[in-house]
Length: 174
Image (cartoon, rainbow, N blue to C red; front, side, top):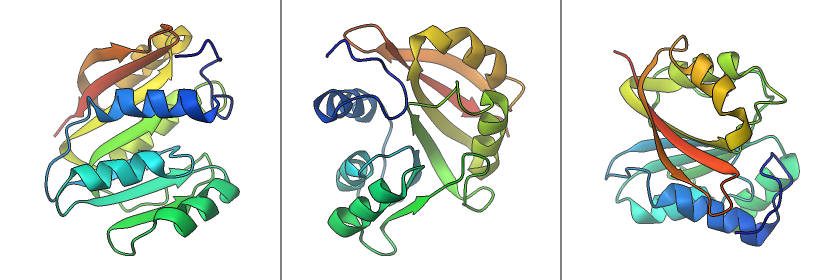
């Protein structure tokens, strides 16, 4: 991995793909899953997850309208692999709609982590999984926000080669 800062919008494409693979290699993906990717960039990570799962539905969200337009043009398969923009405040998805939420480059410095985690919990089914890839320097903020948001069993899955990004998993309470 490069020594680029791990923050929303600052990782160049080769480094981003490496981090995406770090996530994909550790996320549990099963047939019939409904998976939401928050901050999916150009949609590559969502498309790759969709290809790895049989009969899954995958939705990718990104703050960048340009990235979503590119993802739709290159990758969208209506009803199976879809992309939408979001406003940093509320995930534009129904309550309890997903088995897994994967957030890459969670913008902890931009968005209130507690509010974002509560919204992720809202869109998860009971006992759903959340995977968070975020700057390792923000680890304390995230750990303090996970339990009050309704998640349990928080554990570290991996760190990037440069140790700047941390991937954690937690399970939604019932």
